[in-house]
Length: 345
Image (tube, rainbow, N blue to C red; front, side, top):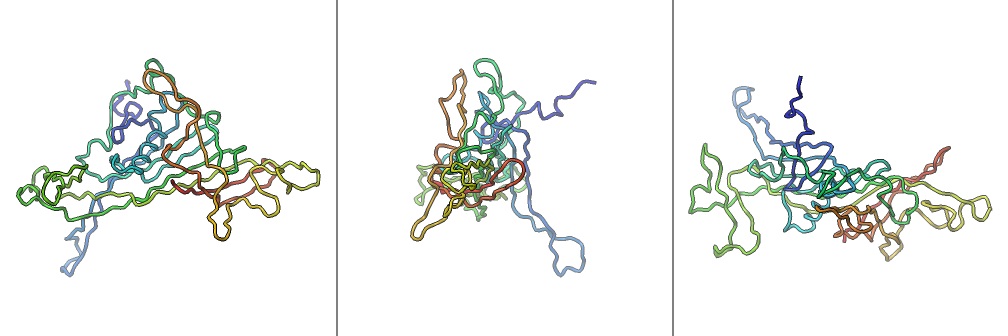
């Protein structure tokens, strides 16, 4: 019996706000809050409904690639959306609310959560396609693609720049929904919407003197259930696991001398956490750096040069603190689990 390709996701591709993405899986969830309400009505039967606005969430897990496919992987989409948060004039729905970079020995990936307004008239927020992703073609003008491995990535997290086994960085954006009574264009009755029709006329905000706005402006659509979305904050946190090297350099049967412990502080008066001094805001003496080699490829062949930050270059993470340090001593490998958070500059 022949296979019907229409039933299988591997024969589909998709775009998010115009960007092609290659992912392990994707979910689009739309929800309209609705519940029955009861009054003094002479019957327990549901007679009145409370119907609120619409929300839309996109969730996906996408790999990190090396080669031409790096322009359509999870890292590329996440960084594009992070840059949009930092420069709202370039933002397109859906907005990033969470991007978690998982850096591992065998495979690295990005888990992304995006938020849109649920408006079915927005045809670019999420698109299902039937064509192949050309960036994955192993022949010219592109080239081969493979999964990023441990040898493609180097990590320095504060002073822990030796033997980092795994790391996770989470970019969290706080989103806010707001609903308004949308202004109507009183000279156009269609601003109220057409009962039984296809919807309301979109009304573009003008200046107070009714002249056209010179900026991007705001397009209103009266009579819809879709909220305004805004980003109110962004924070970057992370965690990881590092191997601990203990070496008794002075042969005094302890590991409290200088340079006798790597990825762990055992010297008297030291700590693995970024403790604070009176009158100062102390940060790590070294940067939080996670880099990938030659991550950007383009049509026509050709790679980037050298190491490049896994996160966008628009984010400065040189001011960070370590707030967790859990040391594990056992019969196997000595490890320390650490957590950190970053000032975003």
